[in-house]
Image 1 (spheres, each protein chain N blue to C red):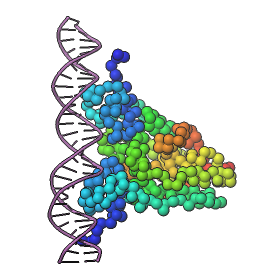
Image 2: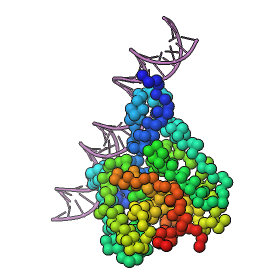
Image 3: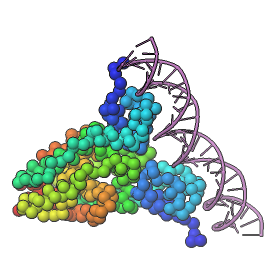
Image 4: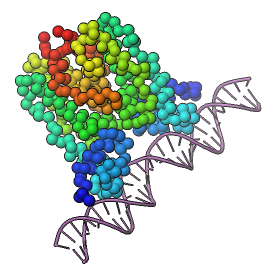
Amino acid sequence: MAGRVTDETVFDAALGVIAEQGYERATTRAIADAAGINEATLFRRFTSKQNLLRQAVRSNFTGFALDLDAPGDDVAADLITIVSYYSRLYETRGGVVLTLMREAKFSPEVAAVLTEPERLLERVDAVILHHQRRGALVVEPPRHTFFALVGPVMMRSIARRVDQRATQAPADPEAVVRRFLDGHRPG
Amino acid sequence: MAGRVTDETVFDAALGVIAEQGYERATTRAIADAAGINEATLFRRFTSKQNLLRQAVRSNFTGFALDLDAPGDDVAADLITIVSYYSRLYETRGGVVLTLMREAKFSPEVAAVLTEPERLLERVDAVILHHQRRGALVVEPPRHTFFALVGPVMMRSIARRVDQRATQAPADPEAVVRRFLDGHRPG
DNA sequence: CCCTGATGCAAGTGCTCACTTGCATATATC
DNA sequence: GATATATGCAAGTGAGCACTTGCATCAGGG
């Protein structure tokens, strides 16, 4: 035997199955099988399905934090940071995060795990406001700018998963931002 | 008694509960209660949960078809048609369609009901291509234009439902298209 | 006024699934 | 090599839920 199955292996299996099936349909049985361990062992080691998800998320998606506390003079650079962050978030580990976000609304269990880290949206708003005040961006509600930037990225992610044929590449953050800025620089 | 409970009333109740809870968590018990009928009656009249959803969708979302078969000279008008369609689709009846779309990927039962009507995406692509050939739009993959247009609309719809505090109004199709065109008219 | 068919009610069936448990075996530690 | 701890296995528990059924009631049509 190649040694004991590590926690990381189980996390991978869990996130993989959840990305494919969604949290509710992902049975603990299937996760255990994918990880190559027994279902009983899974519960002995991780207590509950929800706790397994919590640990898997923690272990995979922290350190993902944006470095946006000191916005600079370069609008494009800051926006690219934002879009890249969300793009990576939606694409990593088979798109689990997108899957979980979709389920969070209906499953308190999932929602409890996905508490958005460190007031991220507020920080994004602050950056956008900063550049609007500098006169580098058309003035409109920051949240709208956020939608316009991240919406296409998210939509593309969703489309890639829903439509089997559409094997589109993930969105290129630089291109998204460039296109956006073309329409939103004050004239 | 105010007369027998009509099919339409039951459809409303079903779509309402499903919009709030999602299809899988929406129990037939809850739907029957919301409609003011007995659960047994629900099954006697509609056979199965899936069939109830099918009928409800049919009764509510046909006649929603786009009038896009003959794109004209006015880019803005055609794009507004597209965005309005999707905006209405996401907003009507408590956002059921968005909810169902999210679940369709994981639930074959839901997916079976939501077959996209009449090759809609292909028709949208065709309209976009038409205007690109006319030189009225920057040339890029039509699907990308679709993402850029509908992404923000969808994102806003999702945000309004996930984030209780963000009581943003639904997207205004004319504004979305205007912003988009500002950045995508050939220079 | 009677008859038919739809309804409410309450109990029940069968399935799935998260989670448990008892036991035998393997693995690690000393 | 003895002992403690983790694992596999197989069976089981209990809850939720779609769907059923038998019976009493009620409304409308002839």
